[in-house]
Image (cartoon, rainbow, N blue to C red; front, top):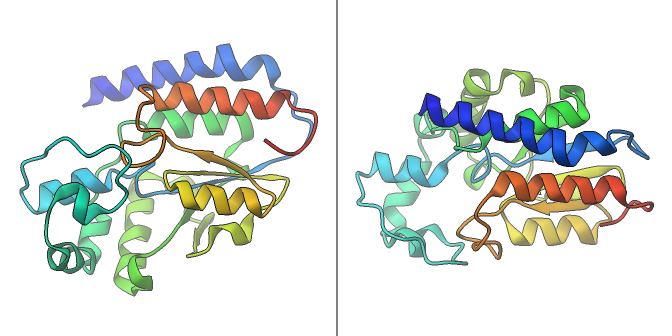
Length: 212
């Protein structure tokens, strides 16, 4: 897995150098809000490990975890009510590369994690905070727990999220929403999420207005 992370970091550097750096002069200052589960946190792999499931091919475009993994909702609910579950989730394969690109382009001071706690439970919040301390200490002071992420939308803000609906809502609120490609959203056919995100950022840099 370390080898995979090194390859992804190399890819991140290449994406930055080829797609973003040439347009490094931004027309306006941006704040970037990054989703956790499904983007930098591998929630699905964590569920599979904890419940000792035999992974199958996730149906393209299916958002619901119960349907995607074909397991009873009660099992998922019981698991997600545990603080340790959230604290010990694995990082996603794209975690290092994505944060590397965003930090180079915007600076850590302009990045924040924006995540929705499971059913607003304190156990979920506690577990996520512990995860951040371990894997994303740069965000300890820049983390937002919110059900409605569009509240933070604006012409100077970007949301990177794996939820199609979250991105739509963010855009409707005049923010710059970028959908992170995953098997469970409308970008299921995208092979390289990091290259896709790089292309989106380059597009934002090139536009003269504050809209996608």
